Length: 94
Image 1 (cartoon, rainbow, N blue to C red):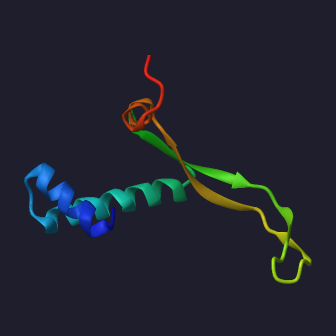
Image 2: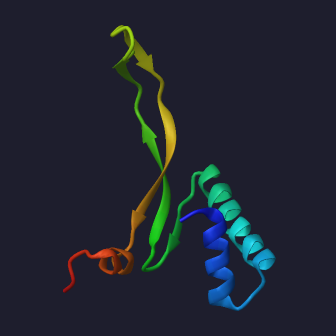
């Protein structure tokens, strides 16, 4: 699904214009970005949790030359699916 298709879906489901749906989606992505930038987590009960994960520095290989390279430590966004989302996609049901 593309961003445009998601905006159309949100507009139809919420009974609002595509412009308002796009604004809402933009607001959501800004909220997630700002929260993760601060190092906090954003939890949507049943859907999932957005967090920041720290990757340690490590050694890697240049695929073209095979030479060893040092990969710096970095922070990366992470999403963990919630129970309801897992079940909807086909996970175990209790």
